Length: 420
Image (cartoon, rainbow, N blue to C red):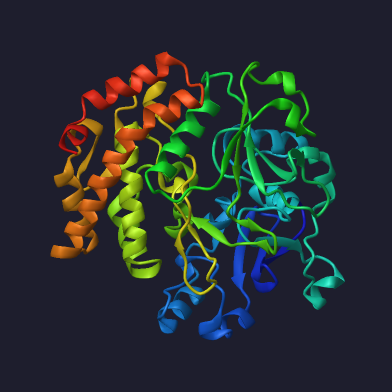
């Protein structure tokens, strides 16, 4: 790109600022003065730019230039709106650009990003009118069924469910489900993910609707034969889409201004929990976090990194913990996956995490005495429920016996399972 190019940053219909890319490959995010002057009723773009209930601190963050510029890539908040892995490579190849040239990727994908962020071209006279429609880059037609952005490494598609039919959303239509094809690398992965999510639901964890789909219900994807044959596709309802439009979300990499390659090492569960307690849904969010952590330990999910924890802004002025997603028993596939993704009160190995680990974590988050004991009881009751229901859920989903035995072997070594 040999010219200056600018994208409006909209949060639904509110102008937040401008993302500008220069010929030297630097990109700057500038907050619009009108958004700053919006005051305490300002819909929040990110907890990295806000302290709910503290307008002075929020204004200081909005005016702080840190984390608002980058070279080649875009500032971290926007970088985390883009996919990783195979989906990013496919999009970059179709646009004929390098996958690190993130501004160009965002220009093409700005209409269908996670949450309520819309990036719309500001390089035309319509900029003066603060245009609200999401214009895509001239090269976006090359994307075909990939005119959307979803986080994560696994290949996935944003699709629109209409009755029993799932189709690639076209034009300005937004997908309301994420659909993942079966994996050529991990047999029965759709069934394992669906079973883990249904186990979570049965244990009282907040999860969206999930389904296993036969290929004949899916329309508009090319080369269906390119995926593992004989297995269903996995579908999960998007909690950032509703009948009335977009609901804003952000993951914790955005909250902490981190890049995707930093999703394992820079943040721990204590930092996530303290953020929930102080700036999100408070104690109910911490209890929900506790339920997910005990499930991750018992089911052997070693991939609950910061991008697999998100906030949802159904109240635009203050977020809460978003529903759980990407819950999967990773120990079913590898003997090397022996720890949780992030540090948990000084512990990471599944086999050393106990109820005392949870108690220490909650004390560090800031819970005291009776409140902490109440959350520990939530851990106990959720853990018992997980152990009661998981096997039936995995059998019902058609998970192969060999994978079920790996999970059983994992649980047999856990002091936490024995203590429940």
